[in-house]
Image 1 (cartoon, rainbow, N blue to C red):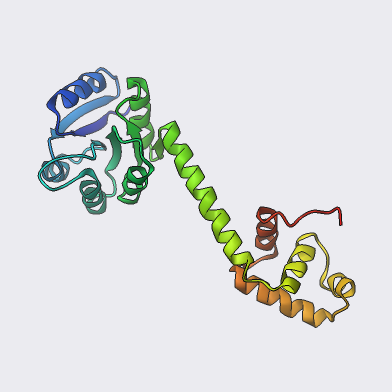
Image 2: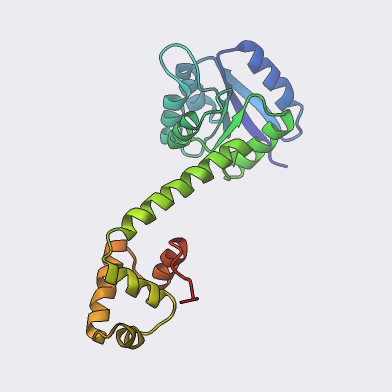
Length: 219
């Protein structure tokens, strides 16, 4: 069984002591060091080279967990940072992930979840507590829907019509016959559609049509 070397970064000694007791009781985890602020954490990370760092976000002396995480992960990508915070806020969540953290968990989480998160991050996987995972998914879906709507609005009515037919499996000739236009015109429209939507293959086009709800075969 691999021994996971963990470093604690939190400005509260009581919190660090509690975490140390919890983690050292695990057969595969050892706390090898701790720091009370970001500046101490950077120096300790360089010297100790832990596998995983538990990182608080709100810390004194002018360096928060975001900038500390960014500096550590940029200087040594092998060190995984798991943010451990009381902030259940999507702005903190996304800033933490952008800074290079591999996971985000709340201080209110059970000890068993924290241990699970450490093991998961150590194995190279990402870990988000349930409400954080939902925020990430919701943000992605909203962003995707916005991007799809904007791209679709770039198309002319004729291009939208051709997009729907091509996605349904009609050949260029069949589309041309249905719309009473030449096959060459259909090909030109298809090229314009692909360029406007940033697509490169027919499969991409079909996926776009599915997301946009264009595959209604009742007509």
